[in-house]
Length: 137
Image (cartoon, rainbow, N blue to C red):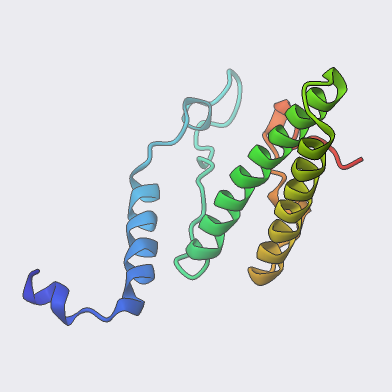
């Protein structure tokens, strides 16, 4: 460990991550559609950039991780329902699987509350593709 690393307080790791993310996003080139104006359009159109805020990088990272966990949870739930409909599971397995999925959903809601997020916040908008997660039923 270097003397610089020894002198760091553990709380500054998040600051380091936020600073690194900010630097990385500044280095990203703009997408081609952001730099090349369409025919007949004004020549100096500003490029769309991702705005990063070092103060929110931890929350944004948590949001991304929770979004992926929620996507996987929903996929597992759908597969479980397909297995139940196909009759592949015993009654005991169905009960255990249902209880496990309910607990996982409950934990997701708790984690969202801890980070001041809602389940709807996890549903990323993918532009023309629509939203990442299917609509709530």
